[in-house]
Length: 173
Image 1 (cartoon, rainbow, N blue to C red):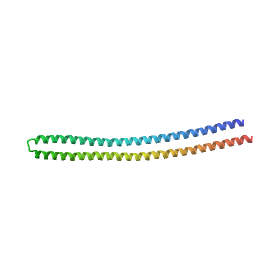
Image 2: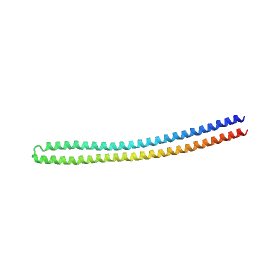
Image 3: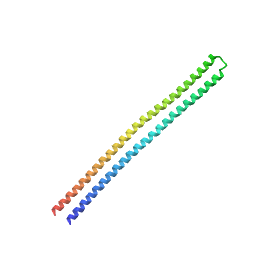
Image 4: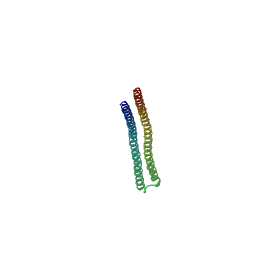
């Protein structure tokens, strides 16, 4: 009779230990899920900011193309209008139109350069944020892991104490 109680108590202790291990695994799994979600959110945010920077670069390049196109048309018009005039006057007007075009192109290039710099800065900031998120997730994972180890150790100690008590009771009888 006592031996059956002893066996039943050992089964209960093992079941309790198994439940503690299952709970530890579940907490570990939740920690990993949170880490993945944080990393994914960081990546999505970074992609959105990079896309905005790309749009800025595209818009600046398109503006540069339009300016060049308009300038070519202006040069053609000046050439048409000045055919009958003296070559020196015509050349001066063409040079003035080219200088104006060059200034506008330079401004457009500066805009493209600024957009690229902004894009680089966003990428740099995103990398730093991603590292911070990754480090925080790792710290949370380590914290959960340590908690689980403590709980498992306590469950084992309780189980061993219970087994020892049962053995002592069995030996006394």
